[in-house]
Length: 118
Image (cartoon, rainbow, N blue to C red):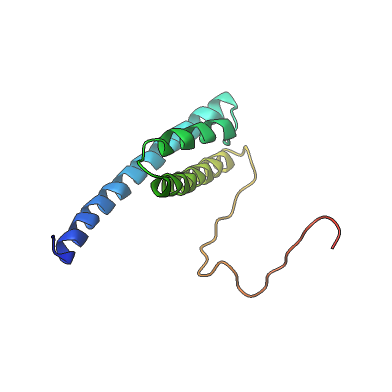
């Protein structure tokens, strides 16, 4: 059995690769945004994203990993869309979108709004 520090070192190497690939993916996402701007295409394509999630999640060996892949890539695609919307905003195509860093999801002031009978 490998030592804990050795296992953590292996994870660190993989994490660094993931970060490099994420940055590369986001740069390509900027190129996708430029294409969409030039061709009047919308940023969000639900059909494409669903197909992508299905394809990626089918590549893993069990349901736990499938769920994890869906969560991971759903978040990655969300970040990609945010970047694309920022670029559209920079080109004056849509309203600026503010992204704020939050230390906490809720700050104690929560309002729930719903439609229908109470």
